[in-house]
Amino acid sequence: DGGITQSPKYLFRKEGQNVTLSCEQNLNHDAMYWYRQDPGQGLRLIYYSQIVNDFQKGDIAEGYSVSREKKESFPLTVTSAQKNPTAFYLCASNMGPRGDTEAFFGQGTRLTVV
Amino acid sequence: RKEVEQDPGPFNVPEGATVAFNCTYSNSASQSFFWYRQDCRKEPKLLMSVYSSGNEDGRFTAQLNRASQYISLLIRDSKLSDSATYLCVVKGGSQGNLIFGKGTKLSVKP
Image 1 (cartoon, rainbow over the protein chains, first blue to last red):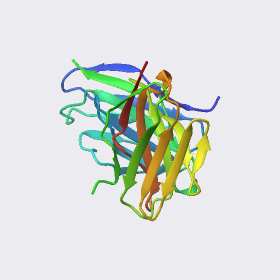
Image 2 (cartoon, each protein chain N blue to C red; image 1 turned 90 degrees about the vertical axis):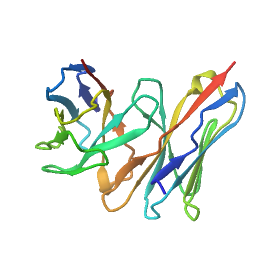
Image 3 (tube, rainbow over the protein chains, first blue to last red; image 1 turned 135 degrees about the horizontal axis):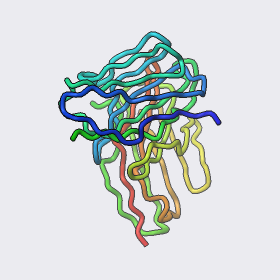
Image 4 (cartoon, rainbow over the protein chains, first blue to last red; image 1 turned 180 degrees about the horizontal axis):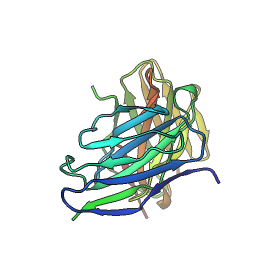
């Protein structure tokens, strides 16, 4: 079945640690996105990538890093520089500028700093 | 002006009511428009795409007014299961990025 998969579903991080959230899609989508959602808030864009080996900062990129070495994969690293990382992280993909299709989301990763 | 703005809500309505959600967008070059539904602690899921001529899917009707840069979603005969947050999403600009509104929470009561 085609889809987009995030892992892990829950993640606990100690202060000062870097952690990497996985996002994989087999939909042959060009574009992939990372969003952060805080309780009762909307989605805020962290990073996006329209093509392999290229990515752009979103509205709240500070303290995060990404890579796009393969079309299928867009991992997000939450670094120790992110001062308030506890949130719900959502990865999405779509066809990008070449199509009008909607975005598909992974099930999300809940990150908690302990 | 924010890129995508929605009614702040929340909306609390009885079963059977008709509910209207409104959304405005700032980029006149925006290309595609969607309504998503997000249940508590879940990922957003597509409810409807919004077409220029307007479109209907059962109890749900979406409208687009490009001149006013305005999108709407109407839910008729609301059900308890319609309780969720409704997100307005606009795709546009040279990068074709997806811009989300903050969402409007709907609670349908018996």
